[in-house]
Length: 263
Length: 321
Image 1: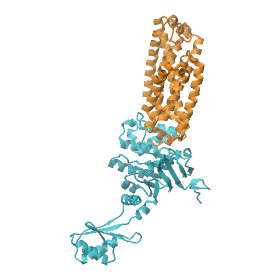
Image 2: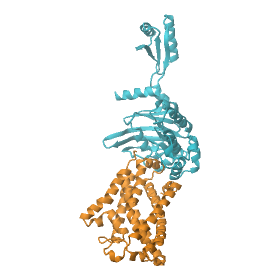
Image 3: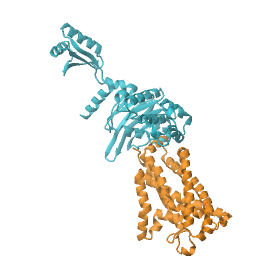
Image 4: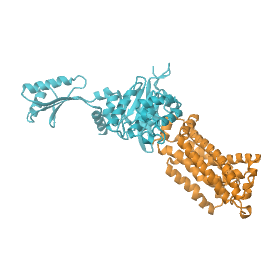
């Protein structure tokens, strides 16, 4: 697994990848801070639970990093696409065969690949959180949002907790993406299934069936990163998503280990 | 003494690079490989030949741990077929088309694979030089020509100084110059302690580098053994033709009168040489003498030896009858 992890870094450490990731992170951070701060309204205007970020919430100690979690919560499809693409392309391009000739321990190969992508995502997220905080700090005065609490000791604790939340949320999409990619072995098919399911399909069903929020993985991940909704608490969403992640990992690993590689 | 696994017990060293017994692979109702058994001695360059769909790639896939056999047993470098992690570190392979990461350079692709297998990345310049890609090492794989991609595939297979090299159709899609380059490359990587198993449809090229043959059709073995032995199964013939068509019957009659088995085949007379004892040169001399003594002028007199392709086609067609 360690060798696979290091091998994947050969791809991820290239200057082109790092520059692209850096540009995307900077744009995301600035864009997120600008949009979230601009859309924040006084709490009096947002009476419902989970109806968007309020100026009062942003003024608290966790306000600086709430900008980050709120902005990230809209990037679920993007995270899913990245992981599906990174895994499924190895099948469609035939490079999974090339890798298996060098690392026949299939479970280790899959785990190492996922771990390296996840580690890369973790670094990008850490940088994004810091940049988003800086951008938000600079932009907050334009919305009359006080940022004094953002530099408190409590803010650091909130920042770490928010980072862990986002990391878990990314892990959920990563494992679901991995599983769909391993099962379909095709980038377009995996993306079509994944996006259609987690996007319109889950939300359409949710409109007619409230329980969907407590059952479907995409909706649960949305609820989790939003800190819970009126239908499902963050803790319950966390537990259910964790169970889904275990099942997804088991299905992906079993399929990958047992299936013939003929293309 | 050698065990059925091809391993000498006292030393634990494999005497056979590959040995399979009753290897079978079914995909649903289709049987791709049907009870295949063969052994590959260490140090040979073995040609693995058979028509499209004969089961060559599936067999190679089973040897490399990519495809699980439905039944059958085997060893690769003395280790059980079902445990590829115990032997793949000493096996290099290019199976089907070369599959690499197009945005990585040739050197980066090899770096990734060397890291993955735990091999010394210091070997990379050497193998790139061996396959003639040293000057293009820093170019992206996506910019390579097909021939260069194939050569990078061979370079990847050579990482780790493998004891067994498995090359599946390495000349596929190459132009004549590329085919010739690949033949020279294969010849250059052979050595006494390295076994090479190579499949190809270009039998004339295979004939020049292989000293061992495994011939299969419809998933079953037709021949295994030295390449010379396979060709020896086919008869050499002497072909003779008279200048004037009218002399052909007379020449054939004269040859038969000498006890020769002469058959008129179109514009020529074909005389088979006895497999074990026949001397084609002596037979040609006899024919020339007969013709000369009877005033027949010969337009053609030659010895036609079997080629791998001609005998293979005869074998496969015979098998299908």
